[in-house]
Length: 139
Image 1 (cartoon, rainbow, N blue to C red):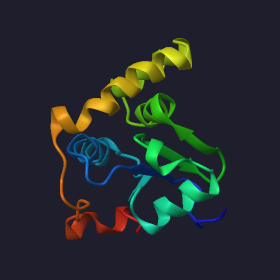
Image 2 (image 1 turned 180 degrees about the vertical axis):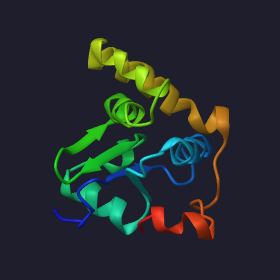
Image 3 (image 1 turned 90 degrees about the horizontal axis):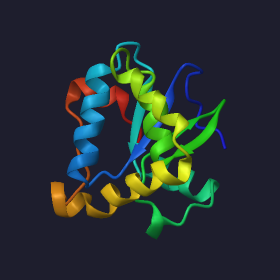
Image 4 (image 1 turned 30 degrees about the horizontal axis):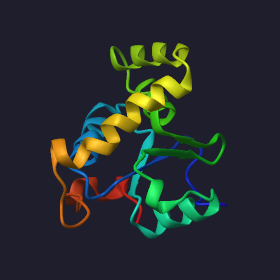
């Protein structure tokens, strides 16, 4: 699959109707000083294309996905930690959690993911980026 991302860019796919996910995207944008990330909701055409290409069950996709044409796809806690390590100090220190076995990290991740709508709420539609952020989003 080719999205023709610039070589230095990675694509973060997120649940576009989740308030926690939208807040997380805004946090990443704020701290992405090297402008390494692009974004797309899982509900977008780009998100659906990646879900289909990687055979991901949409009913089980309560996860953040990190896609790079060079590195492929990371999901759940691994995606979150790979993102954090690119956001500078002190956020990059989160990568220390790679020493925790994936099944334990993902258990915690899944617990938050299952409860995110209850704890943080849900929008009726995907976030619409402001004009100055439009260039960071794929649809």
